[in-house]
Length: 339
Image (cartoon, rainbow, N blue to C red):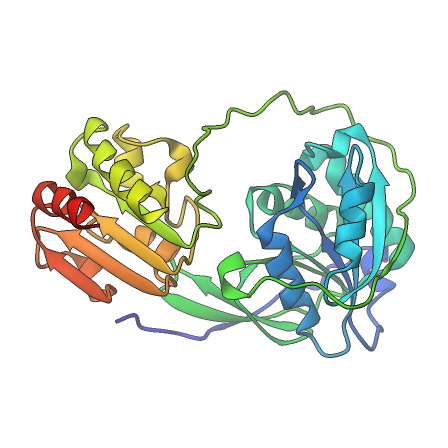
């Protein structure tokens, strides 16, 4: 059982001229930064939209970027809660880096004076938003899981072992949203207006070179409804094939603990935990995972947690809905056969 504390934090009040101009705004005027890949909306952006629209009186403008973002902009304009869509078209935004994307956000903010800027707490959000917040000289509010008011937010700290209530007096709130804490926004019966965001100079100091992506026919770990994860108990990378076979039976994604990744059993892209991916699938099966708090921070919001471990005292059993004390090398093949 976790002990929950609720400390309060007051953000510093050093404001740039951009921030000061919006200080007296009576109702939230919000910019949602849409993250996309290959023309598809990242699910974290849909969760961030739900969070943004939960503030009373919020008016949400979406920013869509990319080399050819017109079709994506149409999709975004039909989402629930969007009142306007800004489109920034540039090849540099197809694979954005902070050095080129943050100045775009700054330019848009100078023109529109938003009180809140929302985005997903993803690799993209963690890269771009801190730089943007620094340009505005405001404190970023990261990884929120709840909203109490337009200036008060809930976020986990200490790997989720404590919950902080954060009150910000900055005029502009830069916020990233934990995707598992909010349901993704759905379509609307109406369609928002679409207009150009305006041109801004793109820095060439840093450029995207390429991605190294592990391709698989299994579901993506971020959005999978079922996940099978393995830990150090699997002993080597060859034994991870046991999980792949089980995952194929369940139509599940495969994950790993940090210990398994550090030991070379699984690719870094499969890591679940505080320093990996934070997920909340319908079913999470932890195989040979002891349950360190850093791992629990990444999966404890799963709807149903199943643990298989031969150590009856493993911490993972404290959060599991179903636990099997058994040697995984016996249990997993038998489970696979039964399925």
